Length: 573
Ligand SMILES: [Zn+2]
Image 1 (tube, rainbow, N blue to C red):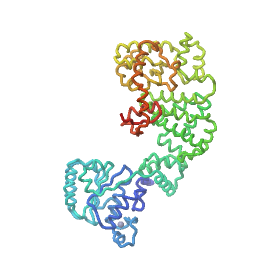
Image 2: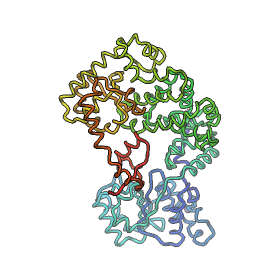
Image 3: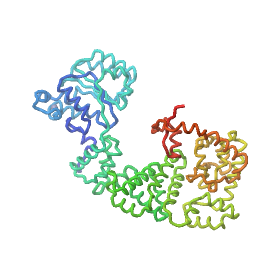
């Protein structure tokens, strides 16, 4: 029987064997080489950086170089520092086979206790067997317990001259200060995107793998600076590819929405091919990644299109020049600028909603308004108008605009019993009213314009001016949710929309006839509270711009900017 071939995976076979083969990380490698060249050593080196950045690899090379028999040549100047370790001498051979008696690698994740550290310290007292130095490489060093660190610290006060500790960690801040301050700290930065892509191209050439530069760039981007992750992904792509590693193949491997699908969606929107739009959106929703990822690819292509209109092709989209030419030729005037503005209005809502798919569909349908076309557009894609018109006509199904909308717009699943469902919404409001102690919440609920129910999702449109109260509405969920389920059945959820239109009272109006009377007055009073005297507003010109990019620190400000585009300024009282 033929022997089954076994090949090391790329992450191992491409592991550097000498300092010169290390990708990036010039500074830590140079510092360690200088340490050897000047024969000055620290008892502890702290190697910190993200996973896959080469900490343990460089640590092993350093250990091998320290004990390499050609170190004398290096010191005599007849050998370059980056040729170390030689890889050929007895010590280097032992290192490569993982049998060097003076190199001990410890995984702190499995040896966290003080006993393990004491044992290591006791053994460290013995002199090296074959080399000059005994080297301990402690991986995931931050996992050591506090008592283990303290035992370690005692040894550091009087370190044995022939022992060197290399502590590798992804979380240097978890290493206690007293140990950290006695260490020589080396930082391993994530590899720059270009360096990583160039390196993969080099690997491809040596391994005889054919690949597109753009495909390799996607791998480099997705690996976020980790050489190991990049090599592993590249190897997988090589196995999956029939001949050449293409960008579409790689995007598929990472579960990314393909650019082809996004181009397809935009073209379908331009020609109002509604069934196709629906199909592509469903494909997005069926992806491994969340729809927020679909959103980001839509935005990426729209931004790329805006630049392309200004005769610039973004570097990461180089593979799609022809697609962009076709896209721009087919796009209505100003489409991408308007679409982008719309997408960003939905960004935060998409992250918050529990009904991402419906909201995403709503966003895409809203895009159709930028395509222009027939005069029926406004009727078809303004569900608020539909309900209002149908009410006016008495019998909804026979009303002409609604029938047209149903026939020409299969996306909106109007179940035909709009009136009945609207009645249920009224019933819901009537039942919530006595439970609700907060007049503002009551006003917000009453201002909602019922849109319909699809698969237990109750869609309600609120006026744009009430978007401010979205959190109030969501926070009061415990109060209204049971009533909602009682009225619309178990598992019913409320999907609030906030009108993206201007504050046109004719378009968004309450179903239940609360546009007049005490509720409306409450809203007015509330608005009065929010508005401020002219004098004060004049004083507030100027102010200091505030960076609110940290969403956790500025949740409300971020939500507001998501709804009302603009900037945030800080004013002194
Ligand atoms: Zn050697």
